[in-house]
Image (cartoon, rainbow, N blue to C red):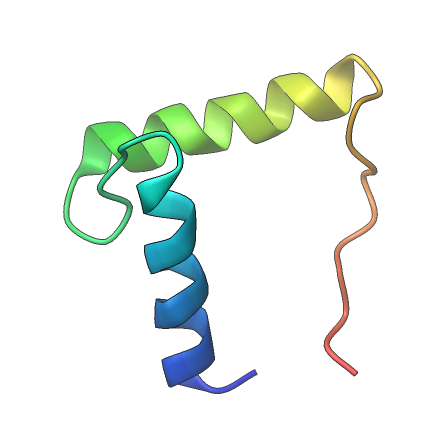
Length: 52
């Protein structure tokens, strides 16, 4: 995945919950905790997505 694609996707994600994932450490932490919680309760796979 190229850097432009990663930045684009992060930008799209930021618009949904209003988080600043590129510049705000608190927003990054909240996003990471959310992903971890979703994995723990079974709402998200532990498998890492692999770029084709």
